[in-house]
Image (tube, rainbow, N blue to C red; front, top):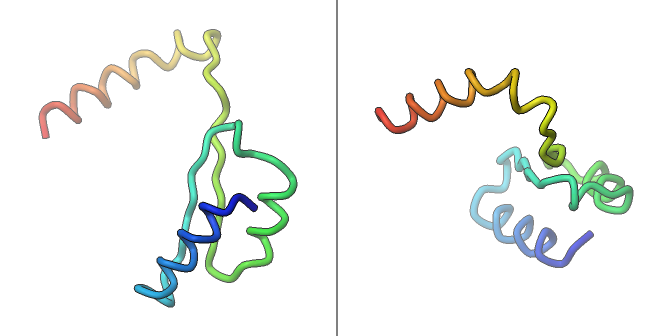
Amino acid sequence: MPDIIKLLITDIRTAWPETLIIFRGDSRFSNPEVHSRIDLLENVMFITGPAGNSRLRKPAQPVIDEAEKRYKAT
C-alpha cells in the first residue's frame, strides 16, 4: 500500500476512530496490492473510477451537462 494512504489512515483514525474511510482513486491506483491490504482494514473502503471512455461520453453528456448546471447554480 502506498505510504501516503497509510499516513492518511493513521491521521484520520487519530481524529475520528470510528469513521468509515472511503478512498477514491482513478484506475492508475487500482492494483491487487492496494485492494488486498485495504480489504484487511476495518472501516476502510477503496473505490476506483475507470479511465475516460469516449464512447460513453456522448450518451452521458446530458447528465454531465445537468450536473454542471446544478453545481454552478449552488
